[in-house]
Length: 308
Image (tube, rainbow, N blue to C red; front, side, top):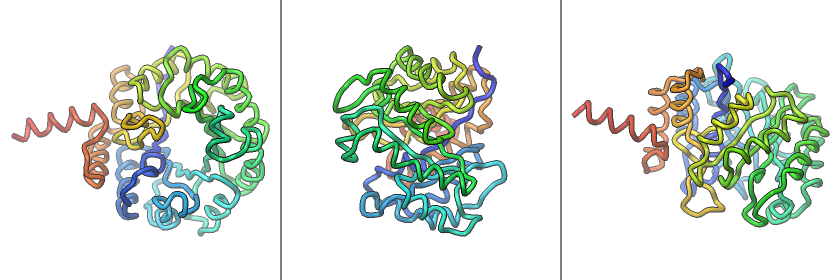
């Protein structure tokens, strides 16, 4: 039986904007967060505390965290790639800190070696002091297992490798694990199989899905996940976030599309779809292109037709 309520973790402000080539002003990022929470988002991944040398788009992280108007009941999270990033996230005044931090590790040895020049096991072990300090500061730690459904370098990723990384994350104290289809090659049964491995080590409430729509499978993969009872998913407003390993391909599944599907299934998300469409239209105007969300494009076209 499908869950009655689904929690959507909005990753557009961070994961969505991080790979944008054109600079996005802090004021626009803040406005996006304000619009998202007004539309019902209660879990928002706001920014990342990474080196501005490697990710200049996120160099305004402290400013954004300081200037967002926080609402009760909204959890604000940030990605931290290492202990230095967490220390930076905690160096701001208490009221400006995140309530959750995100760490990540690949299920693919080839991906780990290619991108961070260390083994998967070494990469997870580096997060042990991060998790410890985050817990000491009262923060929840969410872990992402990237390339869980496929790797741009090695191709298929064995399920045993996915489960191994999940176990490693559990071993260092990560509170929540997300199964991530980084390059969007997953299909429903394969997604279910990967989630089943994660559910062997984490309770249902602490397992989520992160699906890219490169091959148009993201909504189908979410639907398949619901059948297992999984009810937490990462989504990105307007489909922000390209897939850097598949040129020209769509990246993160669009929040608007997921909300439209779930509403049609009678599943509550707490979101106002029209307000979400407005938020997506706003950031799309900032970026100078239409939303990647099919639902948003359809509803915006309908509005224009009615207005005419």
